[in-house]
Length: 387
Image (cartoon, rainbow, N blue to C red; front, side, top):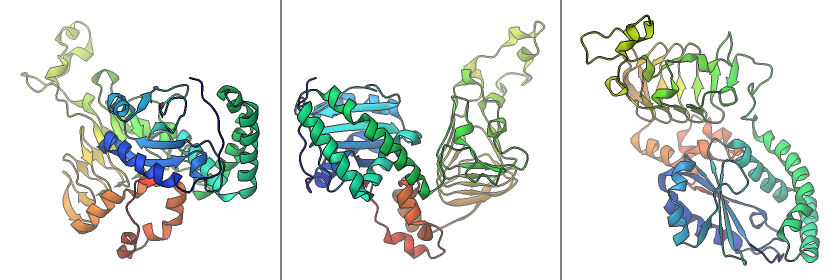
C-alpha cells in the first residue's frame, strides 16, 4: 500500500491518543494481555515523527491473538499476521493516511520487546541523538515523500547502530535475561530460559535454577515428558528453583483402569501388543508455575499441578495438589502452612503484576520490592499501559 510520508513536530496529545487506543485493545485481548507499551517515535517527547501511534501489546499467547482478528477489524485494523518479523502480529489502521500500528509479541520474546523499549528509552534520555534522528527523518521524507521503502532503508543504519547502543545501556537495569549465567562469577546459578531445547517447556525471563553440579541441566529434572502426550511445563518469570527439584510429567502415569498397571508394551518381544490407548492413561494436563515462585531444595512436583504467583514450596515437599497464590506449603504430601500476606495485599499484588514491568521500572523500584515494609508497595499505582 502506497503511503505518503509526513514528518511533524512532537504533539503532546500523542500519549493521550495512545492511552485511549490501548484501552480498546486491552478489551479485545482480555486476560491474554500482560501489558501495553507506547513505542516508536510518537512515544519520545520532543521527537519529530510521522503522526502514527505505535502500540506494543505483550501477551501470553499469540494463538489467542489470531482468534481476535475479526474483533480488531471491527475497530478499524487490518490484520497482517507476522508481516516480516517472526513471532510478531502486526496490525495497521488508517489506510494510506495511517494513524495507528500494533506490534504484538509473546511475553517470552524478550529480544523484540526489549529492543523496542531500549530504543525508546535511549532516545528519551539523549537529546543529541534525538535531534539527529529527527533531522534524518525530515530529510528522507523530503527526498522520498511517497516511497516508504526508500524512506525506511535510508534510516536503517542509524536505527540499527542506535539500537545496539540502546540495548547495551538498557541492560544496565539488570542482567541480560538471555544469558545463561547472569553473574559470570557464579556458575551454580543459571537462567533457565536460554537453556531450553524442548518445544513443550516454556520458562519466563529471569527464572533461575541452582545446582552445584550443573545449573544448566534443568531439562534433565523434567522427567517422563513425551511430545506425543502434548502436556507442557510452563514456568513464569522471576522464579527461584533450587537443586534437586523434579517435575514429573504425565508420561509417568500408568494405566490404572485395567487389572495390572504393569507397562508390558515398553518391554517389546511381543508384549507391545498391549499398547494402552491414550485415553486410558491418567492425564492431568499442563504443569504451570506462576511468577515469583520459590521452590525449595529436593521438591517433587506431580503431573498437572498449578502453583500460583508468589507461592513458596518448602524443601523436600511432594506437591500433589494445586497451590494458591502467595501461600506457603510443605510436607509429603505438601499441605497449606500459611498465607504470606493478608487477602487485600495478595489481591493488590496479583493486580500489580510487578514481574511484567519493564526492566527500568523494576530497577527503579528494587528498594520497595525488597523492603520488609509492605506498606511501601501500595504507593505504586496499578497501570498496565507503560507509556
